[in-house]
Length: 237
Image (cartoon, rainbow, N blue to C red; front, side):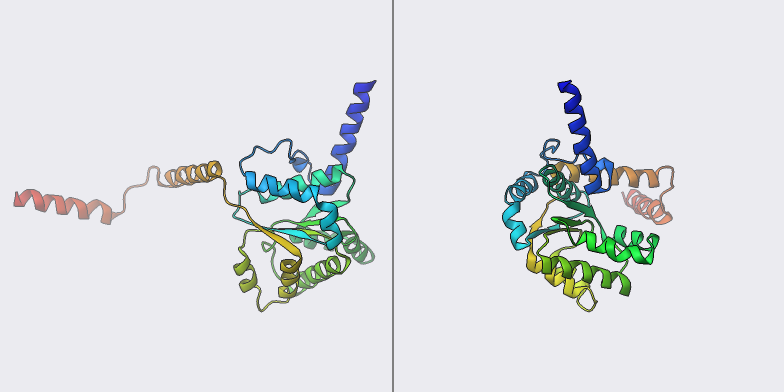
């Protein structure tokens, strides 16, 4: 009976995580399964979770910078899972997901959908900047960020862009106001690429390049010029 209760409790926990994340494959992204490749990120995430009640009162979030594969998504997901397990209402999404979801809703359901996003304890926007920028998407972003800012709802924003690039790329766009609010309220963290992943990516790149070159003849200029030079040296000798 005790084992059955434990299983039910685990199922409930997993379901709550799935609702918060929207993706079942992220449910096991937590500190218990963290492989420790990026100890700085792991420690930062744990500290944020432990101090979340204080940060929540100030509406203080995180702005995660770093290249693809550095662990931004995992860090954001394990924070969401840890806080969801503690009873906080969190949502992990992206502007791309939001903009793809809105057209599928009836006109009467769109505002309640956005209001729900802005009534949480924590909102995560993953891969910010990858979505296409349109007047509509900028207006939606401004609405979400401004509402969260006014309500002091913490946001975690992950982006592959560096801070300067993020500002420069959007300096003349409608979303610059939202970005300035993010920078004002979110604590910045630059995640370096773990050495193991850097080596893995370099290996994948070399294998991909080798696959393209396999069976291909050398360009004519690479075939003739060295041979002609060698032939000339032989004749001179």
